[in-house]
Image 1: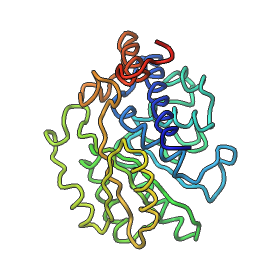
Image 2 (image 1 turned 90 degrees about the horizontal axis):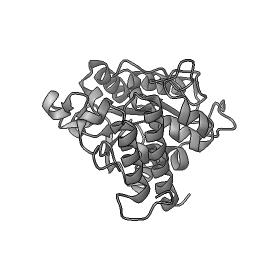
Image 3 (image 1 turned 45 degrees about the vertical axis):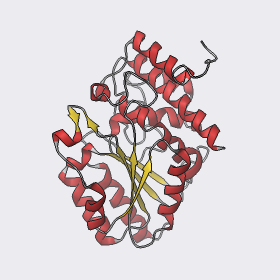
Image 4 (image 1 turned 180 degrees about the vertical axis):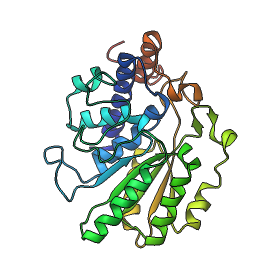
Length: 281
């Protein structure tokens, strides 16, 4: 795909996130919209994966630590061919569905870990990357985590262990959107200087605009070239990206749109906030 095609895919994924949330009547809006460009870059330009062969032992692994942003993961997987778009758009958070409010292992082939309690995904990914090195299996392990999870003690245990063990096949991608459910991260528990903290634990850190798909791809390729250190890609994102009344507002961290808000959100996304005429306008 070209960068323009990837940007259009990310926009389509954002629209599906809105459709899923309004159908479910519950779920998180800001994080999924903010991470659509990162997930698009990963699944359509970075990860070694094949939806027709999900059991390939050499495929790259992806762990999602902040599982509440799973609507963007489900939408991306549908666009990549792991499930139908009808299932993706109509079964989020329904009884018996494969698409629960937090992903669970075995529900879909690419899901490597259960999530729910925050702050545990990096530990799971570190353990997996360490075991792969012990077994001599070659693949890259990725972990997506939130900035709010940096308040969790277990996250720092994982950071220390990965740095000590020089897990070069591990890439963590942090959604640095500066909000959590009760407000701004720096008001609730100041996190900065995040870059210096990771570097102090022997990580290589790359900072990137989380909405620059070409930059995200370049950062992931650079991460694979780093030897003897795990890598953190610090992705600076806008929560609620693409929807005017959601951007930067922590209220939308854990809130779905109602039907009227969803209509306005889809209009924003289809027309790039009125810059173009959407095909459905």
